[in-house]
Picture (cartoon, one colour):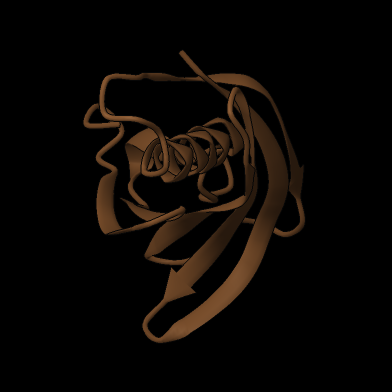
Length: 119
């Protein structure tokens, strides 16, 4: 995440927000934040959200995730929000949302779901 320039802006039980500023290194040919970068911050937001509910001596790994790109990721930054839907003994399922943010306007640009394992 540090290579992309992303940073965590909120950590709470079962919920994490990650912000990625839009800059040439993470955009595609039309200036939108690239789908790969969008998916990466969504995956990390969900992973850290799940991790907030795991035992202290554990680790987290993504088992699978799916992201639907709903609109071009336009704005001065994107914000990924990972929210735990169900935390089980072994598997956890999270909702993933990514917003394009310009000034005080937020637009949903991607959504998804993720399954993680507690190891």
